[in-house]
Image: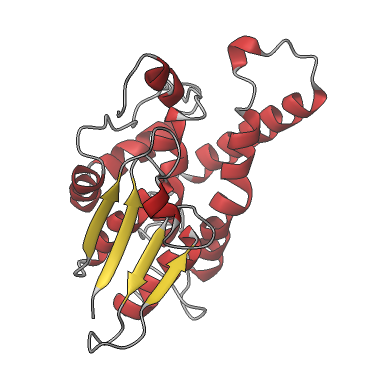
Length: 237
């Protein structure tokens, strides 16, 4: 069974090689550079949605039909259940199930879209006159406060156990800041959580393979915008 992870660099598809490293399963990693900001044509051709992540799986490796799957949550669940024997994806009988389920869906269902909308007008250009911008920035801060409270007394999102919910979340607090810059100084528990993530060997291995040379955003301050880097003539991070 050959699982291939198609990773668009500096994107949410970093979740997938990290998951594979955490599970300790074999996979083939194919990296694609942005061209210059969006996915290149060969990446968009992988799936009609034209977005990252995308995985392909040849099933039994005997020439059967090739499965192609997109969407972070779908890819993560598929890999955990199909290749990982259910590890990192608690089922309904698990005592952490409800907490896991909430935080697993919260990231892409609520948190990441809110951050993206709040970041459409940078803080230094926001004059406070747009009520929708103010609304989404308030919702973003509500999310930070709720998350900060969650990881104050819990090592991981579902409690004491690292799960796929953590794999889903971390991109939105780290690499996503190259696109939607925000500062986490006011949230010490989130920062402590990111330090725990940064110490995980599987995370280190995955990021070194998927985005070699990219500075990991595990601290309080936002990095320089990806778009500013491009404007200066840079082609990568």
